[in-house]
Structure formats: structure tokens, C-alpha cells
Image (tube, one colour):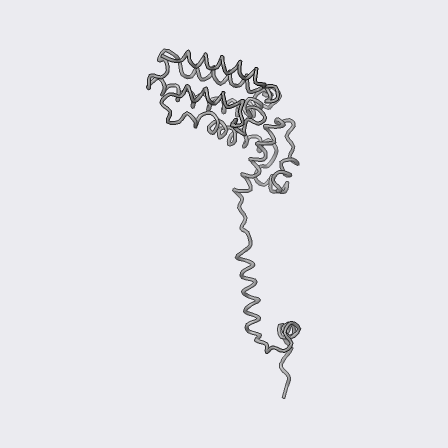
Length: 240
């Protein structure tokens, strides 16, 4: 009787189970199934998630260190991504900075300053509460290093024209949003009708900018209380 041809699967099976009959078809099916499972369980790439991870880390780095002091290496350390992945999504430090200004800063304005006013018939107490919270543990985490927009704008003289224009665009976005809420307050008769909403919005933003440019470590309870008191006095002056 001729011997069956040599089979590597049979040999491996005999090493593992020398006394059991070998079902070569079952082994080959198991190998194929294992390969299929490996393919289906491999984590799919998610470029959008990677981009957001890098952008969030860059926003943190820039608002803590400023544009000049921002480090690509620290951004990579925070994300665990490669330099190639970063430059795939943002080809150059300038492009990354533009994305932070155009995407992260308007979101900051919405989350911290504008969305809390949505749907409020009387926005003045809410605006006062935003300033009151700055001295408490409930202060927005985004203000950990001071107002990121104020921090970046304070060094605008050292920035190129494209960066300055983008930062100014964020201020205009904030001013339009706040002016719209002030206009609704006039309609609801909770704010004087003889004020110009856009001008008042500009003044309020400039006031907040001046206070928030000071690092949190230099905003002690005394300076905060003095600012909050005068801020409240101004807001009360907007009453009809």
C-alpha cells in the first residue's frame, strides 16, 4: 500500500494530538476561519477621529504655550500619533494653527459664552453668573490657562497677517452672537432699547478680554471680586 503524500497540517496535528485521528479538512477550515476573524477584528482606520485628536491636543498646546511656544513634539506625545499622521492632516504648523483658530476657537466661544444664553428671556443674570463662576471650581476647563482667544490675541503683534485676520474673525463671530442675544433682550424688554447691541457687545468682550488676559494665578479673590462688582454694575445699567 502506498503511503499518503506528506501534509504539513497532518504533521502539526500529530505533534499536538498524537493519538487522535486527523481531520485535515477541519484543520484547514479552522486556519481559514482564524484568518478571516483576524481580518474582521482588525480595528478600522478612522481618519476623522485622528484629526480631531490632533486638533484638540494642538488647541491645548497653543492655548497653554502660545503660537510661538507651541511644540509639535508635545502635541505628538499627547496624542500618541506619528509626525507623518499629523502632517497628513495638517501640512505644516501654520495649517494646524489656522485649523485651531477656525474650528476650536468658535467652538470655545459657543460653549463658554454664547450657548448658555440660548433660550433665556433675561440674559443678564446668566452673563453675571459666567463671571461669578470664574473664581469657583465650576469655572470652564477651557479657561484653565486664561481665555484662549484673549491669550492668542495678546500676542497678535508677533503673528503673521493671516493669523491676525483669523483671530479677528473669531472676535467678530463672538460680537455678532452676543449682539444678537442683546437684541433679543431688547425685544423681551429686559434690556434698554436705546443701546446699540453691537457696540455694547464690543465693550463687554473687551472688558472680559482685559480681565481674562491676566493668568489665573494672578486673578486672586480680591481682583476677581472687584472685577465682578463693576461688571455687575455695568450689566445692571443695561436694565430698562
